[in-house]
Image 1 (spheres, rainbow, N blue to C red):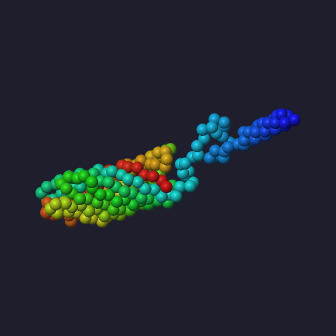
Image 2: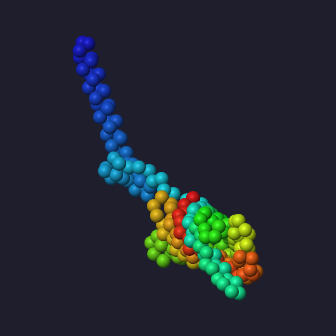
Length: 212
């Protein structure tokens, strides 16, 4: 009697397990697009951790490295100085055609020990020319300052309109790479080696941004 009860219990348990497995197999797992996943997709399925376009905040930030010119011209001589700058930027995509962006740049390597910085805010018209590739322009105002660190014999400071153009390319994981040129400004009341001078500046900048 005990043996028959054990066998019956075992058979009932096996039936319940098989029925439960059948129910699980019939349950469809859905992907991000709401469609059922195929068997192979279910086995190796990982949730999509990349923020979809509709869920992005429009805010972005990034870093860039710039090759800046700092060109001085006096009545008797001219000199072209170059420097490497680090730029920090933050922006907001108002819509697909327009963004607002701010940048702050400081020199990290230079000619003639020139300390240089530039702070600016831009409107950024933009247009998608192909899948992932966007061209844009920069139109705004900023303040550029530069001076020799040791003697103060060279100095420029100018708040003016700044104009630029460039392009960015969308990478996976919400990143974009960009490259652009910006005319920073021209100070006609500057000095170079203690002589009255006109100093103008421009920057080629490339870097990476992240869309939040």
